[in-house]
Image (cartoon, rainbow, N blue to C red; front, side, top):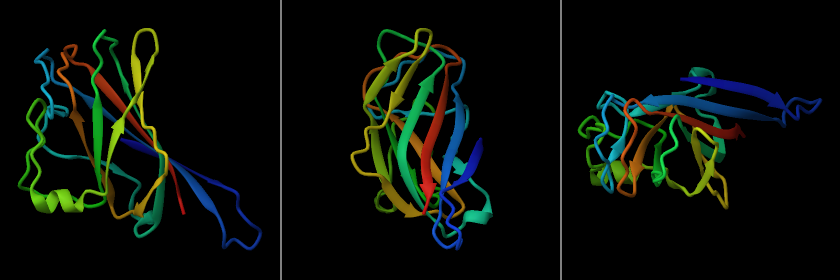
Length: 174
């Protein structure tokens, strides 16, 4: 997991600025080809929710997400249809986010979810493929310690053993 913060458009007075942000994470699936069913979770070998961190320097800042991409290390003929669910605080310790398990949120976790974004645009990149968000409006919310996320499959999908997914979240601090 990593992040890049670049300051742009600094005004001379220093009071009006925006900072572009790219948050990244890699999900390395288990070494199996167990088919995903509708509503299953894509995760690595843990049952923990994944998080994107920028450290405590930006706690309480507002963040505006403008695009999300998910790139696979493989390029099967049937691609996964994925929705990413975002939280700005840990959803709960009661849910398990195990790879190939059905995503089952409590009512409290669903209320804390700040966005559920279908990654609807698919781009073939020869030996891999990319899924992209199609955000008509950016998502704005308060950044706390991390942005937590879960990837949900919306179709039957057979992965490649050990397939990796590379997540990029693009936005700016406002």
